[in-house]
Figure 1 (cartoon, rainbow over the protein chains, first blue to last red):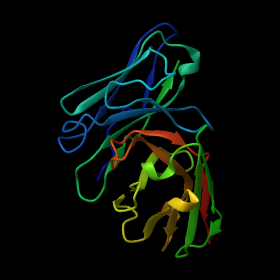
Figure 2: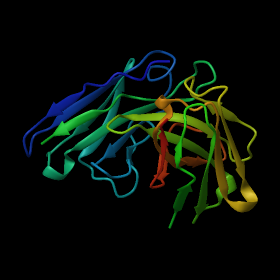
Figure 3: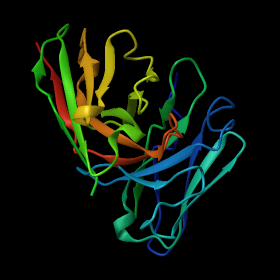
Figure 4: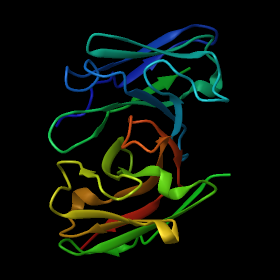
Length: 111
Length: 123
């Protein structure tokens, strides 16, 4: 099954807000509230920043927020900071076949 | 503090086999589903497989189904990935990852990641 669809890159200036989209289908993003987002800085391990579409783990900045409409989930980062420059991946449960988890292709954020 | 430490990554020839291991600490290992996620050099994340806390439920990505086998030994707090018939496309950093939710298979929330072990496929 194909990965979830994300834009390859987005950019923004410090202080601005950006949104990264993640498009799937009714058997994954659109069918369940099991979407998560990960931040990965170069050479580092991925970090969970959003789970169950909208929830932030303890310690994650309030500037990160998640939402979903239909088959598309979104990650919004407000008040952009230089440290937000990283790769971002969405992830979803899928009911297709014997797979269970799908990742998006990733989005490079440039600040 | 949760720790996940992978091992077993080496250089292997196409068609070869390899077993990766991961030892977890700092949490009740048998309460949580565990995943393997891989990342080829310069590429994105790809989910590989999961196994439930009791070992009864296993799932695989289509790209590895029939070639890879996931297992766990809860007495040793250990997770394994048996990799057979390896191809160049399997070369990647393999992460051992803990699921965020106790006692259900998964909600696709992966909250703790190891540092990864590198698998290189080369002739």
